[in-house]
Structure formats: C-alpha cells, structure tokens
Length: 276
Length: 276
Image (tube, rainbow over all chains, first blue to last red; front, top):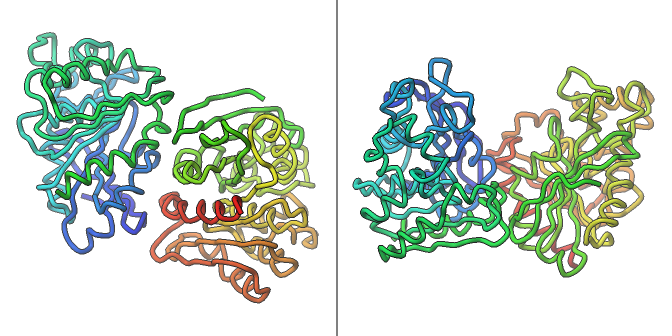
C-alpha cells in the first residue's frame, strides 16, 4: 500500500492510498478519514460508497462528512466505484464499466476479470484497513449515494451481517425493475435473473431485511427518482416491519448539495449505533 | 442575468448565475447561497473570494460553508477569480491570466481590457446582487482563501469601508515582497511599485488597518507558507494594535481540508458582527 496524500482535516487526517488489489486485479485507490481519536486507539468505521461516474474523491471533497465524523470520533472509508486502468474493460456509457461497478462480482465477459467490487469492498479492503490503520472492525456501518446507496443496502442485507447500521442517500432501490439496473445486471451477471436478487435492495428486503436500524433520504425533486424507485423499498420495508427511517425531503435533488445537507443526520445516526 | 442552476441546500438554495459584466467586458459566473431566511426578507451577505486556479465553483462545493451559513442565516457569494473566455487574454502559467485575476484593475496590456476584478467585486456584482436577491447590503463581510484571502484583506482595508468584518484562510499577505505577487502586480499594474500598495495587505495594515475585527488562519504545514508570509501581516497588525485573531493551525496545509476544518469558526465570527 502506498500513500498518495495525507492532509490534516478536522483534527484528524484525510488520507488517500493506493494498493494492488487481488479482487480487482488492478491498482485501486481509496480515501480514509481518521479522526483525532484514532491516535489513541481503534475507532469505528463508516463506509461511504459513491455513485455513478464517481471515484474515491467525490464524497471525500464534497459531502462534508469529515465535519461530523470528527465530531463523533468515527473513521470514514471512501472506496472507488470500479476497477480502473487501461487494461480494465470499459464502455462508452457513463453507467457501465469504469465508474459504474455497481458493487457486484461480474461473471460475464469482458467484465469478469476485474469487476469484483463486492469482494473488494466486503473482503479485501477491510483486511487491508485493519492491517494498516487504527480501526475497530467490530464496529462498522455503511452508507452511500445513488449506486452507492444500492451497494450499501445490498451489502448490509447480505447474510454476513458485518454492519451495525445502514443508511443511504437517494439510493437505487429496485434495479431489477429499472433502467439503472437491468442494463448493468445483465451485462455483469448475465441474463439469469435469479442470481440478480442479492443485488436488489427491495428484493433483499422482501427476502430477509436488515438486522438493525436503517435510514434512507431521497429528495422529492430528485431528477432520477423514476429510476431510483424509493416507493418499492418503502413498501417492502413497511411490509416486513423493518426498523427504518424513510424520509422524502421536499425540494431536494440528486446532487451533493442534497447529500451534504443531511450528512449530519446520517453521521449522528451511525454514531449512535457504532458507539452503542 | 441567467440562472445556470439552483439546488436545494441546507433549507435554502445554492444557485449559479451568469451575466454580461461591464467591468470585465465578458460573461461572468458566480455562485450564491441563500439561506431559508431569505424567503422572509433580506439577509446579511458574506463574500468568499477564491484562490489561484479556482472558479466560482471550488469553494461552493468543497468548503462546507453552506452548513454554517444556513445555521446563521447568512448568504454567501462566490465570485469567479478572473474574467473568462476565448477573447480574454491568458498565460501558460497557472498563476497569471485566467484563474489568477488577483482582484486588481489591470492597467497594462494585454490585461487591461478585461482584468478588472476589483471593480467587479467591489462595485458591479454588489449592485447586481442587491437588484436580484433578498440581501441586506448594509450587512456585508468578506473572506477568502490564498489569493482570495489577499483580495478579501485588501478590499476590506480599502477606504470604502463596506465590510463589517474580514477573515482569511492562508492569505497571501505581502505580495509586493513575494513571487506570488511581484510577477502578477508587475504584469497587471506595471513597474511603478507605488501603485501596488493598495494590493498588499501588509502595506494596507501599516497604512490604515481595518476598522473592525479580523480573523486569519494559516496552517503551519502550508506548502506555500514562504510565499504567503503570514509573519509580515502579523507584525504589521500587532504594531498597529489592530483588532485581530491571528492563528497558526498546527499540522494543516493549504488545501480545502484545512479551509473546511475552520469554516465553522469563520462563519460564527462573521455572523456575530453581521447580526450585531
């Protein structure tokens, strides 16, 4: 692992690191914010998964998350959204290939050799983080925006159960029934829709739900709301009696101006459960 | 004036607008955050002037200023850092020409016909804002970063006296004695150094100071600290008995991770004086 940069930030350190990824068979870059408390011992970790076209950098610079992570003494990890590099397959569309990994392990060519973001975020990166930083890996939660909200919700609801709480900003909630989903799931996973279901938050909710608290914010003026389908997850969560705060925020859109507005609430939510 | 975008943000609106500038003889773009309180009547205004290479957008997306402006019910204006466009003179250096206006009225060619950022920020844009938005122009303060800190300090100390308080993040404080300054002042204003002095915060401080409170933060690990020369302004302010909080922040550098860390303090500082 190599250090790309480290900047003092809210009493802690905002770092950027790169490493050779086994899961993705390429070099991967991630951001990690460590609060001041990490100097004295392991701190809890909140994962932030980004959306389409983003890298590790967008949320790290635009979401204002360090403000509140510092207040609560929590680390933040910002993974990239896909494998990268000249040797990695790509597509002309902004919503497939590099910048659009959808947090799945691809089985179909030309994607299968690098696009293994599920394993990267769930298995490889946690081991790397634990080995190199002062983090309490028994205290992890996860959040994300848009495609990253989809990733956060599906990973949280996987049987592994490694997250104490999950939240999402304007998540894609029902990709098996949406153009932001069917295109990518068929490209990465093939046409057998039975194996898509662990990657659809609404289907995961119907199947098993999440053993912990869930917070979801979506703007009523979100320009992509027909693709996000918040109503599908809301219905499924209510039907399951899932512990959830599901909020439609009047006037807000899909941008980081929306994300940053509600970041304080999300960090306070996760802090309550990470420190419990 | 045309609306480029408006996004809901912390209960208010983050807008981006473009207009034909008389001062700069080109189209200019600026960002304006209006807190929720602006719907009920005029609100105070804090100007944020950006640094080298920046546009209206950098601070608007990375400084986290809206968080605290919303809390205090204060508007934020983010002007561009120079005139723009194919017809506007430029230079291969990042620190001269477009993105590097230095907040002066150029008198030398090829700059004189467009590079009039002093008049643009001090005269033209305030009139445009007052005409189009719910702002109390009797309550204005100013801040900025690096080259924008230089602009904020020199504008605040001009005889006009239109600002109630001034602050700066890692400002260029003594450009007549620095490579970030002599190059630009000679290019824009010519070689008669007598007319440079209104554009050097240290010289302004020696000459007249600021009739109000001043807050300045600089990181001890700032990679450009030898060009910023905080010691020059600190000495001049102390010698004048200027009301000032001058802070050296241990470990911080020149980045927006530094700016965002101390933005809460700067907004609270200005709010105290804007609402007094």
